Picture (tube, rainbow, N blue to C red):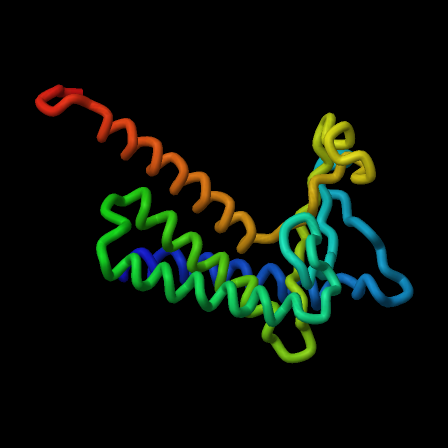
Length: 179
């Protein structure tokens, strides 16, 4: 429980506060006077206001059922994480941190989807990466914008990937072998 209290909750709050600051301080992209980006590090990092009803890379963006679909997926994922937690599936510190990060990320984006008058996820971190325009031709070199919740989910996925390979490697060791 301490992981959720000391990691998930603060990150969820950080996510919601940063999104609130963006929504209240940046013009809605659908309105006149919208400024596409506020440079923080010229040519590399910008703060933007992007509305995303879809998922990563804007997939299913503006689909009439995207919020319902991703809401159901989010709730299902939270239930699944809770069940796995109770079964002891996250046995070590790294996997528990990953689960807590997933919870904060899922809750952060879910909250955006269900907030009255919102119905979209607020993305605001915009990076222009060297050579990214070679991978994504129409991107202008800009990686898809994201938020704190998205960062939590990606870091969690990376940590779970590392834990899975570490566990697999430990299982491959012959019994009685010391590390």
